[in-house]
Length: 331
Image (tube, rainbow, N blue to C red; front, top):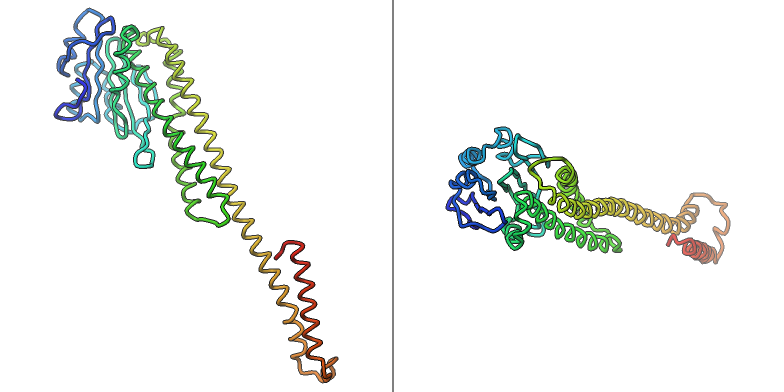
């Protein structure tokens, strides 16, 4: 059933026939009945932040390993794929844009010969669109739960793309602010926040390539041979996302270095201008200090036009110094 049960934990519980067509609705408690049949049918169960009681019930329904169930119940797992008996445990990071920021979540999956269980934690979109896509292609859905796993992973990778595009747009906007005439502290803060979010995204997407390569190449009876090429396609998409993320991180590092260089250059220009004006002020100050000393035999001290001559000399020297400083761009 596509829709939350009263406890809002079982989001989907769907059974499929051996030919990939969807079977009539079942409850979570009927999963073991479907698995008991010998007709090639399988189930896809979706849970959202299940409590300990539901996890225990799920373990009983599917006969899952204690360690795998313990990992799935915790929402802080590193991305990985591990075999547990006749099932595979998969942990991946999900990402989505929420209120202008990136929120990260996790999805844990159990892949068996006749079942796929997905457990979502945190910021993670429902996999109803992925199920709907599979149900439109029963021929491919007949390949079994591994094709459903492909659809889920492809959906997760596709949701990385809007996040990457949002990062790119934000980086482009920050580059314009970066080369503005005035220095803005808010620009530096945004650069740091973007760098931190990109690093978090990098930590989420980088291990996905290893997971997809393992599903594509590692021999496992749970993965249909024909589905491996579909995992290769997702791995190609994931490689593009990873490359785009890494490129933006490098550009962001360069932007932060450029910002520091521009600030340093601006400070240098300010110091040069202050030094230039200081030199201009030093000329009349020096001359005034000379004639402010208590000596009687100073030149032109008693002349009628001495004061005017001194002023003209100070102005001439200041004008010449000003022209020189303008030529060397210190003013």
